[in-house]
Image 1: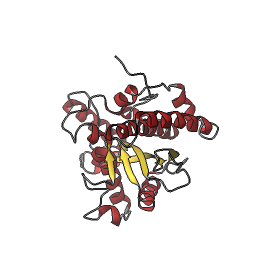
Image 2: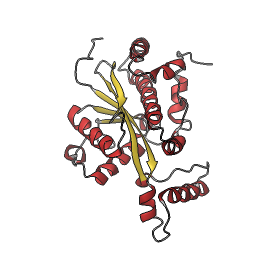
Image 3: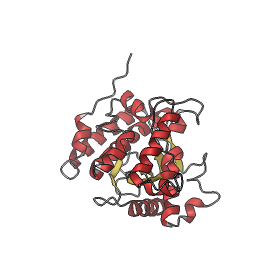
Length: 269
């Protein structure tokens, strides 16, 4: 397997984190009630909990703004090339959105996500609208990035659920744990707003990078299913990735927390 780390990436694996936009909620959903932004969010979350069978306080994506986008570049040989958040350390929503779309159009690589078609890409499309970011190639009628069955975007949740034929209870965390990988480390998506209110932008972006790494390892296993990799090649790539991450701890100290929860693949029963 040749090393493509000096070549343009063949895959861009990414994940997002977002928070509700209280100003937008106050201006639209609760127009006339004269609510503050925090009060509007609290009211929207309470209403969401009442309607949810699981007690989720998730507010629809139309009322969200991105506060983190993390990307892993992966070569045609499936090796990690880079990993990191956009617009560090400021993490400004508008610059995150501009940086994401600029990178997507520049690299022309295949996108890989877990539920990206259901949340991450709609979030970033709406954010492009909000900030006036032109992405003509993406929004073209025949764009393989945006077409559900196009080759430009591989949504692992759609792949593993047979395009929604089965509900994947457990999500990315479940598939990561099946592979011995950390899964949800220290946080989960429903805690991001609380972290944001405490000013923990770096912690949010660290968490987002952890999800990207989990997505990478799930991606590798799906390539075993499709026959693009043998199991032996996948395990070699996993071992190489661990060494690659360990070498970057001095520059990206948050990776030490991910590695401290690392586990090898030991299938059961």
